[in-house]
Every structure is written in structure tokens, then in C-alpha cells.
Image (cartoon, rainbow, N blue to C red):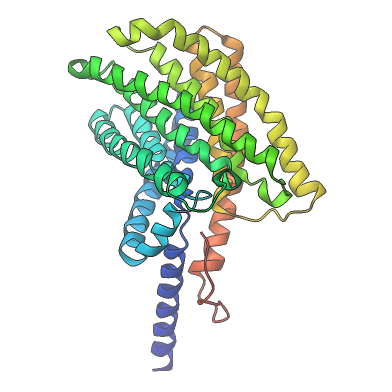
Length: 367
């Protein structure tokens, strides 16, 4: 009987910890799907089929798990989700759902699963349109507290990533779905163009926050890497547009898109040294502890996207040196992915899965 009571207590404690974790689920956790998926794409392009397949499994499984947890959070903790939508520091993280959906779709398209990619694209477009109007209103325009610019951070660039992910997915399908070729070309060009304007807007607002308000070491969080990742996915989307089959919208913009893609790749490359230096300044000089947090996936995805964007751009614009840089950097991204994934497993074991009676189930578990 004592064993049964202990088992029941353990099960109850685990359920409590799971519910607490669901309540504190970060809106931007789909960056895990994005990072795993884009590195899987890169490994597939470079011919590492087994490794790419392994990462695809991680990408798909984590996508299903995160969708399930998000639905559970919507059912159990609507007030917390509403609070996230009203917080300009967290709300833009919801766009990782759009980007994660499309990254998974693009990867399965490489294996010929066009129907799945189409379904995921439709889901992502719906999310992109809804979130694209809801998040700016609830988190920015609807706020009574001013100035809103004081709350701007690197997560605002995820809005750009979501838009460009739609462009990448639609461009991937455009040569295959001949009946919808013109429509997909239109969607790809429009979402790519919108993403560029959003990048300019987010860049100005985040720059103003950094110039007008004190920037402490604790404020320089991993999502600032998304500034580079947004550039990189703009490059990838542009390279895929250049490779699309002929269509009126494509023919009218192909040269412009190709040129701007090279410009954005150059700027993404330029951003890497200051981002690395900022990390050294934050953790080296000011000793901010380097512990696991969901925002670390905001470093993995930009690194992986930069690699894949370079590989694709090298092919589309006949720039072999760009492709070579991307191929080398892919392994850097994979190494960072491995470190963050291992840290996540340890973190989840310590905060959710362990049955140690000393675990404090009343504490907020931020996963």
C-alpha cells in the first residue's frame, strides 16, 4: 500500500509539474522546430541523409508536441495566453508557429510529400494573416502604457521570419503545383516584399530602443540573433523565388530579388561578429549566467538559416564562395543545436520529469 501511495503521489506531482510547465510555455518555443528543421534541410542539401532524417524526426515530433501543449494551454490557461498577446516583449514569439510550420513543410517537400507541405502552408498562411494583424494591435497599438518602444527587443524580428517563411514554402511548391503556379508566385512575392518592409520597421524600432534606453547585459537576450536570422531567411526566400518557374510576377521581379538577396546576405554576414561580441560582453565580462532558456533556440535557427541561405544563394546566383561559407557554417549550427538540445533535455528532466520528492511543484516552470 505504501508503494501504491508513493506511486500515486509521484504521478500527481508529475501532472502538477506538467501543468505548471504548460502554463509557463514560451510563445516562441516553436523556434525549436525551426532550428531542427532548417538544419535538417541543410544536411539534406549537403547529402547527409541519415543525419537529416534524424533531425526531421526531431522537428516533426517536437512540432506535434508543441501544438498539443499550445492547445492544452489554450484550454487551461487562456488568461496567460491573453497576457502574452498583450506583452510586446513576448507576443511576437507567436510568429514562431508560422515559421516552424513552414520550415517543417519545406523539409517534407524535399522528400516528395507535397500534400503535407500544401496543408502546412495553408495553416501557416492563416496563422500569418491572423497574427499579423492581432499581435501588433494587442501588443503595440492597443497598449495604454507609453512609450511602447521601450519594450522592443529581438523577438520583433520574428514577425519578419514568419512572413519570409511563407515566401519560402510557397516558392518551394510553385514549380510542382502547375495549376496554382501563378497564385503561388503571387503569394511568394507579396510575402517576401512584406517581410522586407517589416524588417525595416522592426530594425528602426529596435535600434531606437537600444539608443534611447539603457541596454543592460541582462537585456541583450538571445532573440537579438533573430535580426541576423531574418536577413538570412530573406536571402533564402529570394533564392527560391529566383529558382521558381516562369510566371508573370516572377518574371517582373526576378532580377530585383536576386540583387537584393545578395545585399541581405552581406548584411547578415556583417551582423554575426557584433552578435558574438555581444554574447561575450554579456556572459564573459558581466558574468550573466549561461543557463538553458527557450530563447536559446533563437540562436540556433539564425545560424542554421544563414547556412542554408548561403547554400541556396550560391546555387541560384552562381556564387560558389557564398555556398562554401554556408556549407562550413552548417556544422557550426549543428554543434550549437546539439549543445542547446542537450541542455534542454537536462532542464526538462530537472524541472518536469524527475520524481525527486524534493522537487518544488509549486514553482513556475519556465520551459
